[in-house]
Image 1 (cartoon, rainbow, N blue to C red):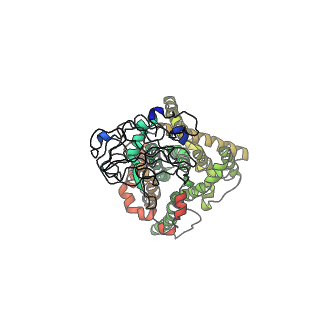
Image 2: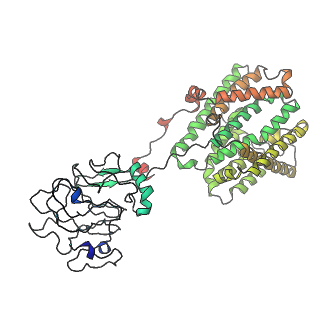
Image 3: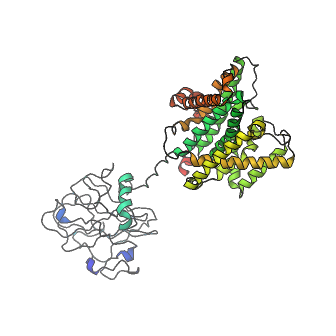
Length: 563
């Protein structure tokens, strides 16, 4: 083997090595070791007595191409050839590759350690270690394979040739980790390896043991798993504000004869359910990308729907009403579960459309020509469809646009203006349009007046929705955690509200006025907090969130591996 001072540079085009020379990196498709890759020296090996020349180093595995065997010396060594020896490059690239130049066989009386590499097995005893071109591996190696070396027992080692990151289970004993900033954890060179390479090796590096047939130990550094996405407190804040308004709106019904109560009712119903549907659409963007989320179509909608329907029928009977149970016609607040179920089932259709929002608005306007029944919540399904589709096409940057100061200022005036309009129109305005379900005929409107009314209501609702989104706090608040359990408040608040209505607790004369509105709103706000507590979920989880794992097939191993 020739001295490295006379080896071909790495930039030399590939070709045959000159007689008497080894094929350098330009001929083998490999590279010379990087400067920061430490060198194994015989002077640092306690198993070798006396000054020795530098021993060739086996660099760490890089890239995804075939790898050359990394030298891992252990045990006493014979005298190594004097003078600088060429460093063995790691083979890179794809396609059939010959092995990287072998380390010269140690000659002398001392036995070779398990990690030292002798010459080819067919070399005659006593033959020179470096003659001619080193032998090629007869078996071609494809991309991604690694030429692996026999596992060696732990032995005192120098500062080079580490096999794993420090502190990583599975790394061979006695092999220290790389110095800070070592660039051999990734194949991108020193610049990329200083920060990301060391971090990746430390976090996920592990030594993979191969089978007995391969008889080798290779480094396995899988990609670090991305951190779990943190829950956004902003959406939880919005959901709690909305669920509190839902409870207030349902409790105001017995006092709607008062103008103050009626004004607050109109103000709430203009936007609170449209914004709830918009948030539901936004959270449904990737609903079909997960089997667990698909299972929730049954766990979170169908099963709770049936349970709540039976529960409210039994409650009404206990309060003196006649037993009535119609599964296809949802009772009171239960309409939202069925409507959301059908909206989410329609998600793939909307995601394939070029212009989903205009199509949804057109359906919303033309649905007013037909008297759609309330069976399976079809009237609300079409009446609130634009808000779900708008949420479906929204992206996080759209919410960030609402976080500007001038938009917040405009939002304050929007909310104040909407409250003023609600107070002005409350005495002589019908409530039917604010339910987003009645046809033009039911509202006693001509077709053009009906379209105009629905268009104006859609614009007002969207303006108020975006104003609320701009004003709700975006960081962690005391009610952020409560917003994660709004389903319990939505399905359970009907029980105390229905009891209060039937018992006449919401019809006291002093409740018909501004003071009564304030008292009802405060009580409902406290009720919303109680129903969103963790203890409430613990108590009712078996009813509202049943675990029906026995109902679903487990994905096959092949499917799991492919996903």
